[in-house]
Length: 153
Image 1 (cartoon, helix red, strand yellow):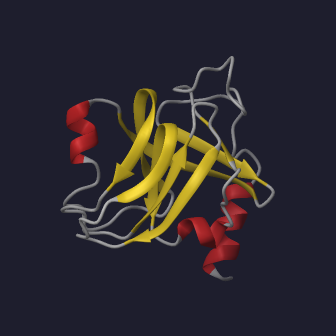
Image 2: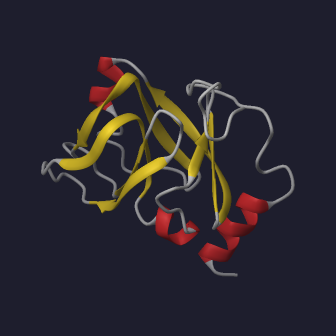
Image 3: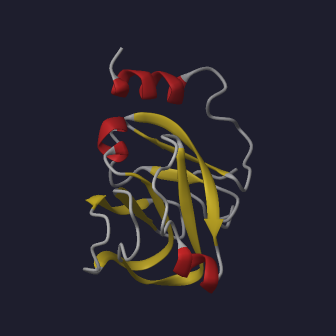
């Protein structure tokens, strides 16, 4: 079985996408299907500054969710980041507005994500393409205003 097929099967296995939200998991869905990632949360200045720096590996179904208190313009970089990452830039309703595929380790070139964003999900580089995640996909997590979320908990 190919990696894409295995990941697709795991993402769509019965019970893989629960109906309830938990702080340590994000759920994504779109025309491509659904997926779940176990996440670490970066929701204060120190955690956001550290991000995924100095890590040599990350589990395939893991990631880091950066949460900001209000919509803003976002740019990220890969300073001291040793693993290739996909960056999903997300608006206050949980809609993916931009995906930067395969950000290169240690590259300090700013990666512009867009305006009016509140979240960034970092996952292993190439994972978004392997799963078919695309702009317009929606993310479910308790950090979104549930009254405004495109996919509420």
